[in-house]
Amino acid sequence: MAVARLAAVAAWVPCRSWGWAAVPFGPHRGLSVLLARIPQRAPRWLPACRQKTSLSFLNRPDLPNLAYKKLKGKSPGIIFIPGYLSYMNGTKALAIEEFCKSLGHACIRFDYSGVGSSDGNSEESTLGKWRKDVLSIIDDLADGPQILVGSSLGGWLMLHAAIARPEKVVALIGVATAADTLVTKFNQLPVEEVEMKGVWSMPSKYSEEGVYNVQYSFIKEAEHHCLLHSPIPVNCPIRLLHGMKDDIVPWHTSMQVADRVLSTDVDVILRKHSDHRMREKADIQLLVYTIDDLIDKLSTIVN
Image 1: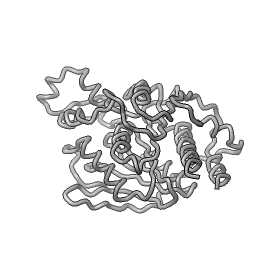
Image 2: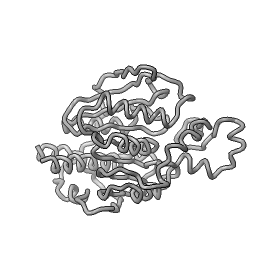
Image 3: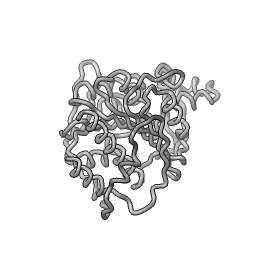
């Protein structure tokens, strides 16, 4: 089984230098071990990230129905938690599903309420509601132990999910983890105009309009979910990937998360030339290597 998985991982080996550095926060076996045992083989990139999973909906009484795609497979399963107003059909989500398919592991990706194909109104969204969305996916769709992969704001939510469901969440991978970032950035601004308009037009080169219009109510509600002010009661293995060219969420935020979590098995992995989205080929390869390493680690613990 290990040989088959290693062959699948080897197919993702890039033909160039990585340009990243891992900062371990505890005594454990890390990615360097995985990379050392990967055989040198010709690389293969995703042909087109073909989607073979069908769109389904999770019906929830008194809550918006959630659109999701579920790939059945072995445990631990992988759940991808997207960023702010991001869809389940993004580059990272599709690549993770394709990689899980190659390993035979389960994978779930979904849209938050009010986003993408899910029901609801985005203007009524709050971090607390999206937290409930994540917990609904874990409780009602996921079978057995899960590795959560959270991108940007999804990294903030994955921490909350790990706190709320420690028996089911067995590892975390954060990509540009934006814990508390929205609130922190907002608190550095003069708020009077935003309070009057009810909307914060946050500049972003990743939005077609050049800004993300964040509801003032979203920010105020998010204040109740900040984590970095005290120890974070998460004890599972955690890997935090971050680009040092990230102009949305400073990479130091991942260092803060690593310092605050109670887990002693934490790596912060920095990519010198990557931006906030971390969706270039080498970024995705690092991500799937990290997933595979955690699957291997968890399998070793179980056995």
